[in-house]
Amino acid sequence: MKCAVSLTLVGLLALLHGVSPLPTTSSSTSFGIDWSEVRPIEEFEHIKAHLRTPTTATQNTPNRRIVNGQEARPGQFPYQVALLGQFNSGVGLCGASIITQRYVLTAAHCVYIGVDASTPVANGTAILGAHNRMIEEPSQQRITFSASGVIGHPGYDLFDVRNDIAVVRLDEPILYTDRIQPIRLPGRSDTRTFAGLMGTVSGYGVYSTANPGLSDVLNYVLNPVITNADCRAAWSGFEWLIEAQNVCQSGDGGRSACNSDSGGPLTVQDNGESLQ
Image 1 (cartoon, one colour):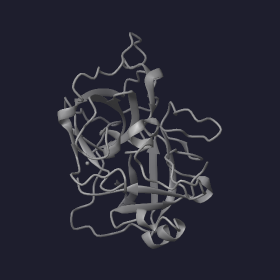
Image 2 (cartoon, one colour; image 1 turned 90 degrees about the vertical axis):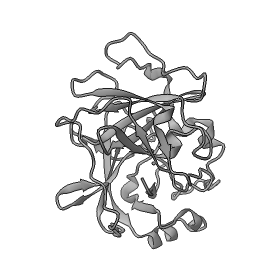
Image 3 (cartoon, helix red, strand yellow; image 1 turned 30 degrees about the vertical axis):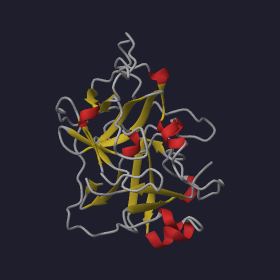
Image 4 (cartoon, one colour; image 1 turned 135 degrees about the vertical axis):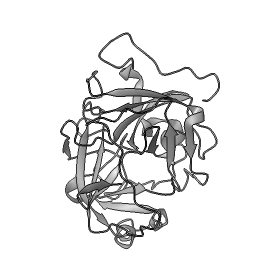
């Protein structure tokens, strides 16, 4: 299924005891991660059981793949993070973006187990500077985080997809390189809606409806940012989903961001720089 409108949540700057750490393997080409145990975040029960979304699939039903996009050039998106979180039933893959040398920004549902910001994941790993997440590229850094480093928006509500944002403090500082850089954020006084600008979404999520597996390499897609009024019209019958904290992107040509791209960056060009 392809979505005609993709929706990205924005808001104010987003271990269960006894849960085992991320599964590891002795392979030197996988960053010590058993990728066979990593699943799209949308497959986990806290998402499937509690996310209140339309029950009838239509062309406007949201999903989270980079579908009909294209493969990124190595280093094209130096702020991109592949974020792994340890849930009760496995390891979830999400996107995130670098905002400082110790913090990455992601979606709250990528790092919390329930419907609010009360129970963070047990632990996790941020993979930075990766083009192919499956192999140990010289450009990559892998940095762990713990439950104590997860800081979610206090108003996070999975039922209504409100304030779905969190920041994660990494256990060690990031070393900036030409392949690893922070993303620029709007100032507090910036009231622009960015409607009419081209938005870029990137991630390692499912990239083809014909091949529903996670992507090994980083992909991206460009689509216009649309007004919230146009977004509500496209979501006829589900207008309650769209509030001022939301940014909507057209899904022209079947291009969109979907499964396991959650939490990743949506950027626009601002004075020649990427702005999230």
